[in-house]
Image (cartoon, rainbow, N blue to C red; front, side, top):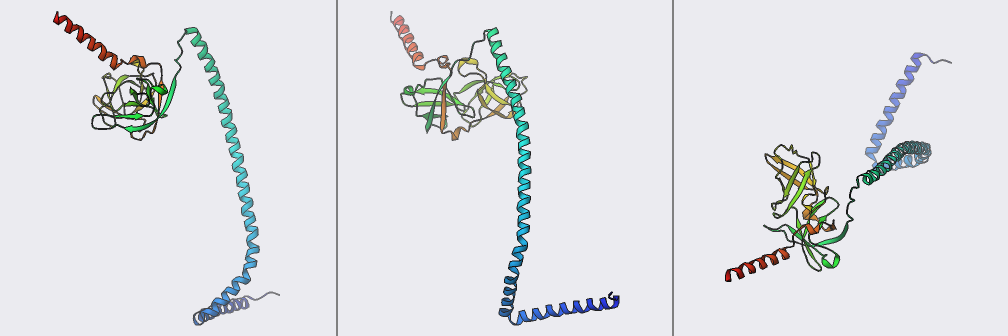
Length: 295
């Protein structure tokens, strides 16, 4: 049986009016007796809780299933990515093995002298002799530990300085920022040579480089190996500013925060003159000159 349009309109109007009336009654009752209305609302909430719980379980199960599906998809994608990376690494491994074999053959053909074996001692900084005129630190390793004057002091980041004085149980490290420090270096990208000169500031300067050298901010500076004090290729720092003929270098190592150093023996320590021997030769020369004058 079909309901006429007029009757349906009347029912809708009555329903709307009834809902409005119920809402007004609930508002009035809630204002008049908040305790009773709160109890009624709590009772309705308790009655609806089981139904809501039953309805929420399928939704939660669907969410969990969706999370598992997303996890499976993510794992699948990760496996594909790792497989591709593994293929690339295997390719690079083959390249490295081939280059290593070629390098060995070329060394054999050219009779290239091999790099000398290195040894090192790890030492802890026990004193900082920083001052207005000195940039050095003292470490708890000396002759008893195999430390020798001239050895390079490095960390994982780069060059710190060199061993300048050695005792039996302690040594002093002259930092690359000290005004007495001079390190032959090169610009890694262009191979231009220069001298890194400390001036007791946090950023030593580059000196004696070619006027045509296009030194730019951001250039990496490494040791050149000239002079026989340091081996070539030790990281030193990066150029931070260039002003005409002056370039400043920020050391890779935060020298004020160094706790441990590696004192490396590259077999080059004999390149530095022994100050005691120099003083002894000077005194002998003075004695010989004095004896000649007395004659």
